[in-house]
Image (cartoon, rainbow, N blue to C red; front, side):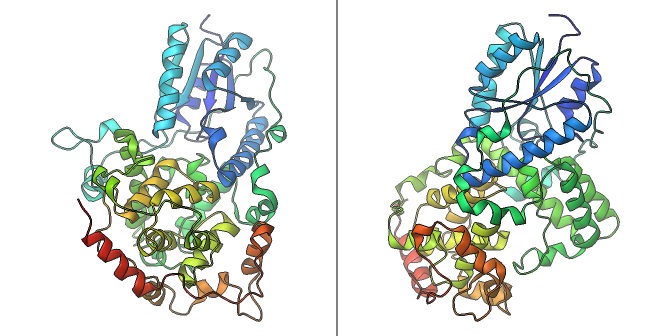
Length: 473
């Protein structure tokens, strides 16, 4: 290997050119850079919507690289074996990437780095997926943070590096290795007939993500503190879709928020807190990997949640047919758009885990299948927070009443009216699209009667409180 040998840059959740620290560092060497994406053991396990959205992101990023005379080399297989094969094919002396922090990625990357180094390959990883490395934020006792508010206080005034500019040039290798054809991966196969419907609601690629951030800062961040809780209002950034695949960097969002705050835009401070909440999820997933798969609070292992997904009320929850309008509207929004408003996420999670007394893993898995902004750390943190088993958990006695929540956050019933077709003479296009997107075997029609509640708001709250008060831990 020589100093002018190619660098394989292994892309994962960083499908962008601007503020891509590892890619920028590789470009600065002047050596040939070969961008690579591997549909490996981690990505191949994703659910239908995340995998379909990944395909759109790869297509856009490949086009952006092509504009600069580069290519995105696609391969499918185990990460280590695929990278080793590419090293042999290209004569690369280095494999670089940007770090990830969820347990599956950490396990994969740790093994890859050790094996490549053992073979004499320069294996390096870079920061950039979150604002602060998990091991750099510690309590005074040298421990990790378990509660969000102290975590926020610890990092809110810390310096965050400015975003690095996109490489002006990526030196091409003498010859490009073979690449799989993206269409051969059929990443959207599991979406079935839902793909064209969800496709109307996605915003794909780096350029579009930058436009989304600019529009939010310019038009909506001022009112974000209040508007973010209103599901019928376009009051959020919707950047989670782009952040999960790294089509825009968290540092770009942070600095945009800081500028808005300096300009006196009232909602910017709340926006910055939400960005740090994302960091908090990765901080916990790294320091306590069980967050993504087991009860974070181990004493909740003894709680008698229902884990049977065949129960009628679980099926009704998944299909948006619980008879609780806030819950059903949210579940239909998810199926049609691949997204769900944050307030709605809290309501549907509380209803499943507390009113229906079902394990949070059922909801977590459903979101993993249907969210285009699915993030392993954020999704797990949100579900465990709602269930009461996680860090910063809602107290067991806090059971969101989906009826009073509707009175508070959707007073005019605009949100539920938009998403629930049954009983309306002229339902919205989105409400009707739900019936076009769902599996035909569900046998649902907008002409059906709207169901009675499977578990009423007051009944469910009483049942949940009794179960929590009688818990054996």
